Length: 449
Image 1 (cartoon, rainbow, N blue to C red):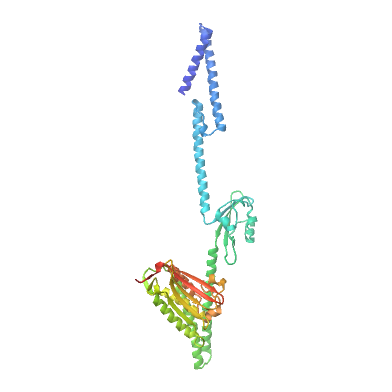
Image 2 (cartoon, rainbow, N blue to C red; image 1 turned 135 degrees about the vertical axis):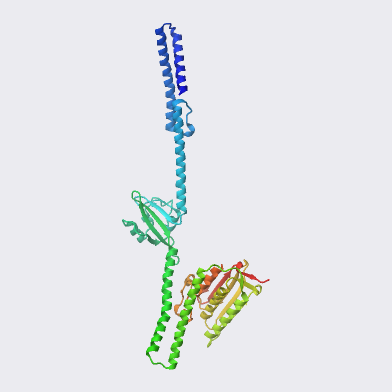
């Protein structure tokens, strides 16, 4: 402000001096006239300079940016400084807002749930990669397309047509097929002026778990109800009829068989429960591989002798590679023995008379240990292989019950191998036989020095 006032006085003095020089005034009136004329000239010059500064500032405000701000002083200089400060603050706010928006979108992209934003006409405004994958949407091509034209499931169409948002609807997802089901839950939420938010979630595993739970309850009920019904009938018969000693012995033997069947079922269920809830066993020597094979061989020979007492006996071979003669298994001995015995007894039960069963152990180049149980039984169709380790799953229910199985043996084997960081592999060809392979990692066995 001081420089503004000083500049104005300087211009007035300069104008008065010029007027006095040209007019040569020597009277008081002439002097005042000269001073006033100089003041007017100085004011006009100052106004022109100030107007030019203002025009530069206005031009900058219309077309310029922070980098092209004019350098000026006085009032217009202060205007430029304040405007530049405001613009800089606004740019910082915009950058921060853009960054927050990018972070928010990245967070939604990283979400395991799908997110779709629909406008008032149910057209896709934005969706994350998860939703696109689950519903089969192309993010670039299908933007601003109506969601009903892309997802044609009748349940979804009815859900979107409803006036009020209800519970989530479950529809078939992308790639859904009978052998590999994909189930997607879709939940709608309204917001803004007629806009909608869709949340999608893959519930395939949940539905499969729920189906397995229902099957498990139904199977347990059925497996227990059958022997209970038989026992009840025999008890009622013994109570109401006068039976001979021989008939009583026969009925009691049948009752003992059914009781043993229920006992085996309960024991297998308790074993599965214990396996699922227990941590992995410690890495300590507990069982010699040669001892495991010897016990399994004795059990298999005894079972085969009972089953084939009136026919051609089965051929049983048990072998160890030379480098495994002193091998020691590291883990829970009882569980490992149970897993191998389960597979061997299954092979004996399902291999017909005169068939062959080979049990062998080999070390692999990667340091793992493999136990193979091969048989020449009837084999298993390919469609049954993925479900063999499910609880109570049977390829032939009548044959399984006749052989005394509970339907839980392979499930127990699978959980034993998982607890020992191992793997159960099943290969089978219908009419040619089956091969069950147990693989233990290098940390679960060692050769004695």
